[in-house]
Length: 123
Image 1: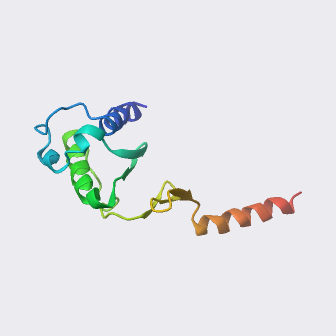
Image 2: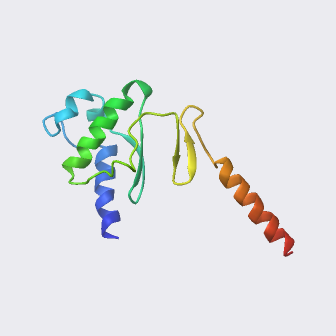
Image 3: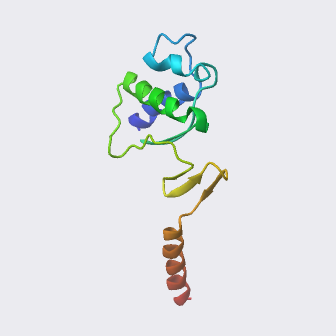
């Protein structure tokens, strides 16, 4: 519960930054738009998905890493992926930013269909 409350502060800061100048973070000069708009991000406990326009995605990734570092949070290098992509699996769902939708991955369809047939056999 404490971790969730701490991450709420981080999420709120990312979504609505409260600083007026780029002096707080070294890479803030890379993101003048961030200073006004903030990040579009999805948080669930320690799983974070940051959405950014394709042209600025790399700069957002760098700024995100720095902001996490400034909050004293470490990012697990092997569990993190900072390469921009149009499709990503996040919390078991495929997030497609090009089509602007969430999908259940095909592997989960098969498992769900199998479970449904097993359940129907008991009826």
